[in-house]
Length: 169
Figure: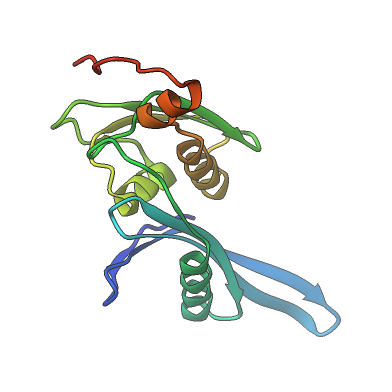
């Protein structure tokens, strides 16, 4: 079962719980239960981190996941409050499709993708999850897809040409 909580920390970072699972292990004396939590952490301005945390208690697992996510942050360049271009990316059996949207559209996405967009600072995007809807795989596919996005300036410098004025959609 997936739950979605949001907190803003004193350092300006937002964190969202993407997935919380109860695990069990059969041993000679009975069954041992544990918890696994997956969180995304972002500053709302293009930095995001994702991590899993495991423990015997829920709060400890969530706190571990948040700490690991803060250590594994990456920067993703944004085009205002949307993305630069269409992206399709797969991770495991999950495929995500993301498309930039005009101002006022909002976040048209569900579950783990919505959590990633909210902590990243994206406010206008159209997105769809195809295949497996596993929250962990969807979050990883979304972050890796956004990391693979290229900007107009990068393409111009890489090719050594000027692409001219950007068109208004």
